[in-house]
Image 1: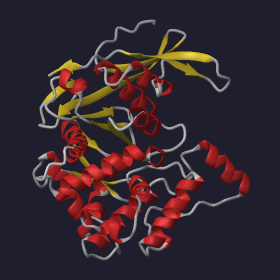
Image 2 (image 1 turned 120 degrees about the vertical axis):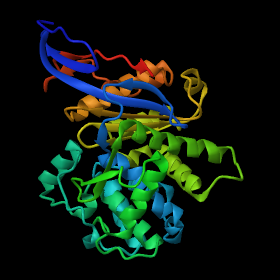
Image 3 (image 1 turned 90 degrees about the vertical axis):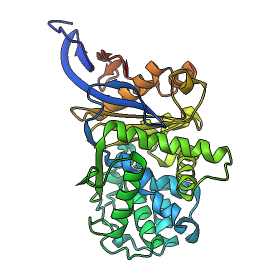
Length: 357
């Protein structure tokens, strides 16, 4: 590599030994008690969760009993937590969810867009198909928020606005799970027209640790488990049972969750935010964790592909899962950069090393 005196918390890409890009990584690894175990960059960086907020946005639908009231399946709950690829089965499930909950497609305030999946997009173009709201990657999430609104006894009208009671309920849950005070969780309008919370990375990691811990607590069948914990465990378990509804074919979230077979959940958000919740195991105890582990990362320049690669590299450095498990999503851990002819044109180098706190 020419003239690259680089070190620190970066991923770099090169072509023929020529530095092309340098991506700063911020990350926090915490346990269920909130203890920070490892860091990269600024672990307190205020970060928008974007679609990483979807599991917590689904809590009111479960906690209120609305999920059962409207006859939703666990696969439906997974779609509420997902950013789907607009695959036919996903769109049909979203439409079925609308019918179950007596919500019209026109009630969805997410708009429409080209599919994340290039395969689906090509098919739409060939057929001259114009996507509707149910085709939006976040349609399941929006349905879940509306179902949550019905569950707490409010109208679905303007469910996406800041002054709607369902948004206040979601914000309150985030404050509860992160330990942040009112006013410390900030909000900004996301690409799908719903409000995204922003919080320090270590707080986001703690929230995901809480989902994994909830799954552990319910599995232990403790009589003291609260309705909130049961709701979060149900969300966690829906995500691990139906990873195909969290993203889709050929995408990182689906490959990651499927590879670990219940040991963790992971969810990406726009512009390079990723969060993972890992259930307690001998591996987490080896790292000094008390209970489950949460990981939250933010790629400073928002690069989505680098986000996937860094999430995989952090799991590699923490030695979570066997080599065989990690190899199942190795294609996202991009050491090689290939062009459209499949020729290797460059490589990624992970310069960062997790620092014990």
